[in-house]
Length: 103
Image 1: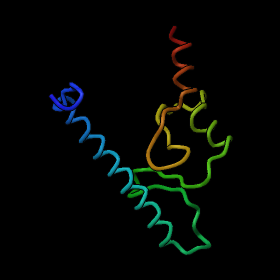
Image 2 (image 1 turned 90 degrees about the horizontal axis):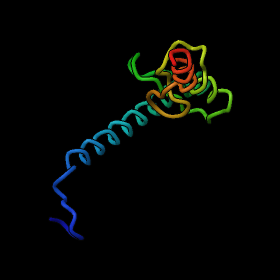
Image 3 (image 1 turned 90 degrees about the vertical axis):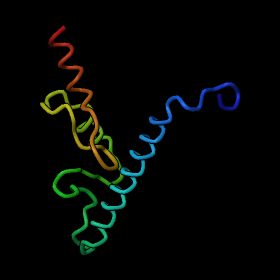
């Protein structure tokens, strides 16, 4: 047992996995910034994808983009690019619509 009676051996794999996810996320953000900085200043738009696979959007978030990505019930995609950052998020509007139509 560890300090304060907690078993520190349980869940240590989860802690390591979280660290790996954070490290990978930080690496992807760094790669996106490097990609934009290597682009001529007049052509930088601060959004796109890495290796044609992982989307990124480093522009300041807007309410329109938030709604477009996270609350778009008419968009057939459940997983969409994040409003800000690297990776994907859930289109909650589509999930709610699917639940309502099947319930």
